[in-house]
Image (cartoon, rainbow, N blue to C red; front, side, top):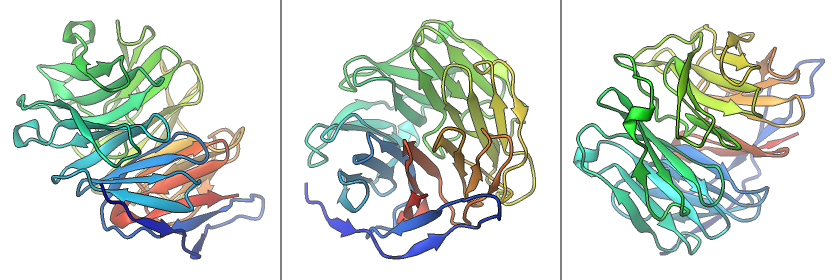
Length: 337
């Protein structure tokens, strides 16, 4: 399939700084697409994949200096993507299954061709997030069906998928679901698989065989709650969120756990105020959180937060100190310390 390569622009977006904090800056990357991107995965510091609307997939193999644009076909919204290596990626399409939107595609030739590996027309299915724990094992989270979580699993690198038996999950509450906003609802550390709804975190210690659920201080709402979940290790994790209708209002937007997700407490409200959709570690005690209200940086393990730029991004991912963020209208950037 044809691809187009675009070079990084020379435009620099300087972040806000404070006197005691060397914040860094976002370096804007120009890609010739107006697609909205809500999924991003860094394989390593050089290789990254991104999934967007209008059936758009991006790939870089040189740390973001150049990007290829692929359009597998149709009018799908790839709100989830995982790159397994330079040549292999699995893309998840969000949308109503009844309208043919709940699909998973896989490429093994660097994005040139794509094979449909999962599709369903089952009423109510809406896929939200995809994550892999290793090159063989992956999970796709969808909206609940029949009062139970809808979670798919693969053990062959995404070539085939099957639903985890619903009976192994605790019941879901009325109106409980996950937001397909940043491909950040699932977080995996070793054999521990976790996923978030608006106000709770489901946890499996045995790769999906059994589950428990724990509450967070986020309140469940149709437009509000947890938008992203991220665990640094087996014990330390963060949940970020807010309200996408009131995405710049002043409210608690980051919660932290130190016991693997059993208990949670809000941190200092991240500046700028408003919705945070994704968070990642960028250094030993440094974290970046992004959302439509802008970026926030913590240098004390997530306890306090400072502004780090006002550009709106949906998702961030880092490998070491290499961080990329992406959002609407093809807005893509690389963090420079």
